[in-house]
Image (cartoon, rainbow over all chains, first blue to last red; front, side, top):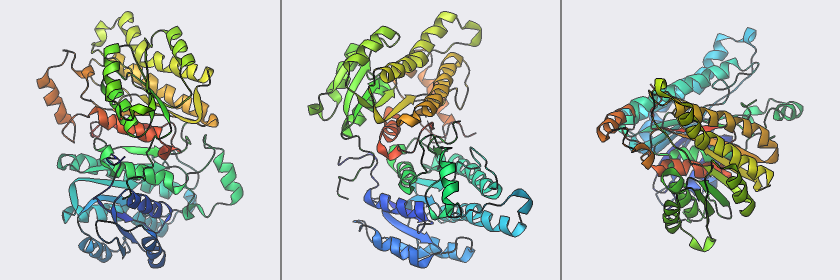
Length: 250
Length: 253
């Protein structure tokens, strides 16, 4: 197992939203697979908790950089502090259910800025500053929502994730010749704080829509991300990897 | 890194691989054996199968092989009767032939559909009937980007067979989820295997065709094998009904 093709040994990986459910689990798993990580999140304390929980890297210290990715100065600061990376995981995201008649410009702008504009602008800045190495891999946490299914009240979130889907494919096309790959993971419902607004009863009812009869654990998504970061996926680019417990089948 | 942590490991699993005598099937058998699995290989081609067997790692695992014509339903059933319970099945056996639609014959269509579509359906059926799929377990179909994500001239018969596999994979995923059996597919673009060098396409045409791939190359059998391993492993235990496109960006434009 020494020559594990899924190994991330020697790779440096930047993860956004690293204090959250999927982000922190991704950090843990890619570090276990041998990577050095640079973590970023807007939440300082939970971010340092994640950093301190990681196994040490033989490739140098892991870093945590607090940043508001909707703030251009913060993005510039993050990119300047960031060494060249082999992998970028754009994972930061928010969600709020709002029926169509109640959508406001302010809410729409806020969510789109975090879920869509921020990953686009961060990717742009890293590429512009040549901080993504040749052979590198960019992974977006998109969603099954919007890209494969719509659900009531989820218009804004779904819109942002469809935007990510189109951006991911465009990046894949533009950067393929430079040897940089770009893909997404598209989860169904994951047990994270993001779905905290659902009641237990709503959750149990919602699980019936999943043929595998459970929601995802963050690790289910993190393993997909780690696969896409590794050289095991070196011919995969422009792919939206649906990880949804079969939810979109019926 | 400890060298031990590997969520994509197949250690302790028995994996059935069809089409193991060459190409993607062979690479899948080899890579799965490296990841610790015991392999049961199936192919119609004995020489190829024996060669693959000699290439497997962890030979102490007592890897098995069966020479079977997967177009013969009775032969499938006889093999399934003999094999131990499996934790995964990788359906690779497949054939292709370029035929413009004016020249399609029922015989040719039937031959290709039998190998590419009906055989994996029958194999799944007998594995279920004879209770040879562990719970949980994972079935992976080698479908294609061809048909499912992109069409190309002359490829109608192959494309329809692979779209059939896609429809079957998703239906099986839905039907078998409650039994803990997951079904997914890998959907490669062009892969450097014996299948693409049957004299119908020149090397020059292949070089030109590679320009359609943003990554500038065709896939290697290992690219598909490693995706299959991810889908066979417990790392994908929340994935079912997914078609995993592995095409170097071919279908983006």
